[in-house]
Length: 189
Image (cartoon, rainbow, N blue to C red; front, side, top):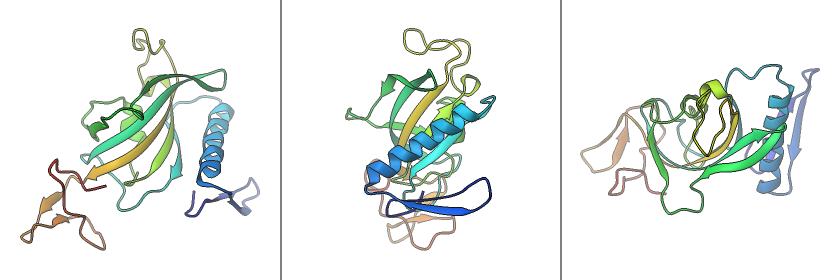
């Protein structure tokens, strides 16, 4: 995925291709189908598959960073998207999580590393990295493969602290300081 609705890829002959889409939605829809095709062509899905839909800006997130996320989760059924089992997209509250804290399924912890603020990613998570043999009563059957579309709305870096001038300063290499944090400690949208 590239800026301005471009995608680039290599074919099986290692020839480089670029595609420009008419809209951001068309580019994202294509990227989702690529991820589903990767899943369907895998003999065994034993790790998280992910496909960026939008790159976002700033630094990629790492373990320990705090995020606010909008997401939708589907069951993967009949080689494609099944029913939605969870979403916070049309709700007032974003999901807050600290990467690496173990509060969400392992597939999220793994699949979100490297995402940037404003970025969107498509995750296909095998049962062993999701809810496994137990599932979630009434929502996720046992041994279900899950699909999530996640969007990082806010980021607070683990090594972020307040400098003497009140500006938020990150100890990671970055070209410019992060925006001034708002009252909840997350960077402004």
